[in-house]
Amino acid sequence: MSANVDAAKGAAPIRITVLGATGSVGQSLADIIERNPTQFDVVALVANRNVSALSDLAKRLNAGSAVLADASKYDALVEALQGSGIEASAGPGAVLEAVDRPADLVVGAVVGAAGLEPTMAAIQPGRRIALANKECLVCAGDLFMARIREHNAELLPVDSEHNAIFQVFETAQADLIEKVILTASGGPFRTFSKEEMKTVSPTQALKHPNWDMGARITIDSATMMNKGFEVIEASHLFPVQHDQLAVLVHPQSAVHGLVQYKDGSLLAQLGSPDMRTPIAHCLAFPRRMDVPVKRLDLAALGTLSFEEPDLARFPALRLALEAMEAGGGAPAALNAADEVAVEAFLLGQIGFLDIPAAIETVLDNLTAEGALQSASCVQDVLQLDDAARIKTKEWVKARSN
Image (cartoon, rainbow, N blue to C red; front, side, top):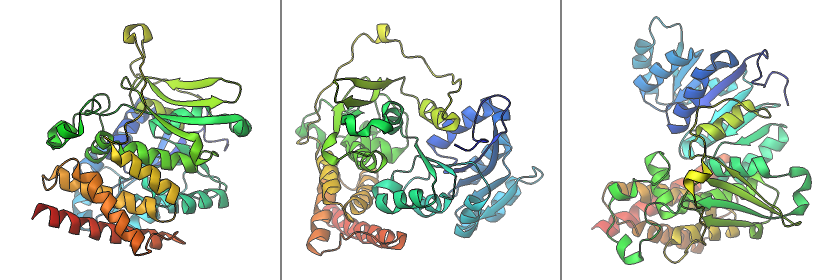
């Protein structure tokens, strides 16, 4: 570990760049930084196109620069930051320039495939990457991890389940691990029949029982596709075989991840469902830092329950597991098709159960065309992403006519 990447009192501030600064992860991270201003030096904040949110956040965190991916918002950003001393820039080139600036830690929290290129570019020798962008591992896991190894960078998982596993995964004894278990709340429709799910609305699907997240990930949690994505990510993050990865539905969301060892030990990480806990773990690693999250009261909770996931009622999880086994471009196509289908559901163009139906059809078609080959570069991933999106939009159009 780099000597200056340490949140201990008296150490030099951690130089940090945040990709996806105005999203839910970025907002939780900002809360931690504001509470510990002397421990962090915010080099750059990067967002997509939200001028007011980015400019306000940059001022709050005294950032060195604020960058928007949308070049057309440059003038508005300059005006919003006038007199603050914060540098403003915009456009894809500006984003890549921002991640190239000296920093100890880069948080990759851009939502969607748009985060792939800048997060890949952020991987530099000796740098620490706190990853919250699922597409980097779902769509380009082999490429991403190869780059991490090539540059001897350090990868820390921000996602609550992966971070939980990271905390109890004894890497030096990976050969003595039997199983890695990711937990899932089951979402708002955990007890619904397939017949009941046919008519659920976007409003119902957006009411997650435990977590406050963005729209797409909330819908993905309702279909359980998000858990499938997390299993694919775990297959890249941890040195285990596919058959060592499992999912348990755990409605209380108190246990976030478990690791089963060959001696019979089952280690678990527990905590309240608050993203500030895993984010803080990444910011301070290998130390810990004070975070004002609600403490988990097991006596008040009373009961922790677990159940096997129902792949018949939640076929999206099955599709994700099959894509992981298929490998190659299947996970990237899965992700792209899901993003389009979820958006169509939110717009009222298709039903809830149409989401996995659309994805399965698109994957079957791309498989038949021989289009799901392994990517040799990021451009290959993006081309497949485009192809899957086009096919999914065609499916949605045909379905809604």
